[in-house]
Amino acid sequence: MNPHAFSIAEIEAVYRAMRERRDMRHFSAEPLADGQLARLIEAAHLAPSVGYMQPWRFLRVADPALRARIHQHVSEECERTAQALPERAAQIRQLKLEGIENCAEVLVVALAEKREPYVLGRRTMPEMDLASVACAIQNMWLAARAEGIGLGWVSIFEPDYLRTLCKMPVDSQPVAILCIGPVPEFYPAPMLETAGWDSRRPLAELVYRDSWGTPDTL
Image (cartoon, rainbow, N blue to C red; front, side, top):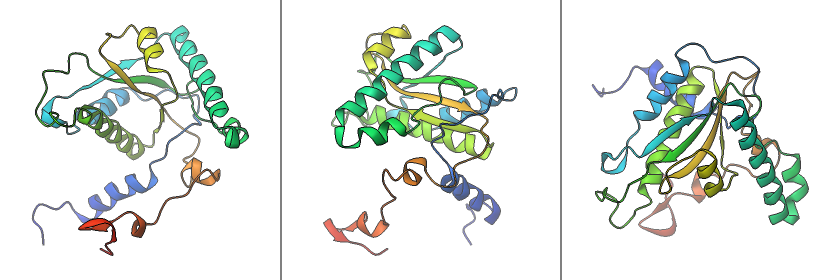
């Protein structure tokens, strides 16, 4: 037996959080419990980062007027997205793509400014700072699900507009608007799957051996 392994129950809990994590859009009116948001942000801050640069920054939207302006902008971008995909425009307009108005907390997650000096792991792939932020968001997502809290990642926005709206440094980069809060229930499957937008691909189509397109059956 591997002496470094968690207990069977602990292992199952980790995999359960992965299986039951959902990109939530429907929230109840309840607030988060005291200290809960701090715990979720701490979970994000435990994420790995290339070159240990820790490029994530979290802007908590506490001003109702600012939240309303963000919601208005996202709503407009949702319509622009529908117009950009005319063959699926009707379906897009029927989808609920954000929960900004009803969630307990809204966070804007961004890449920090002045990232140029961080070269370790980024010399040939500077986008790895973005990958690090994605790891932080995933940490938060899994922690939230374990605590029974919904989280939705909204990416339908214009980065320059959101940067200006939130008074962010010019060389920072908004990555996500996170809607966080208690939910009436968790979706039994990913919402876009149940809505017929797409389905989860079988692993046999995604795992290769030695050369691209050569299947590996694991």
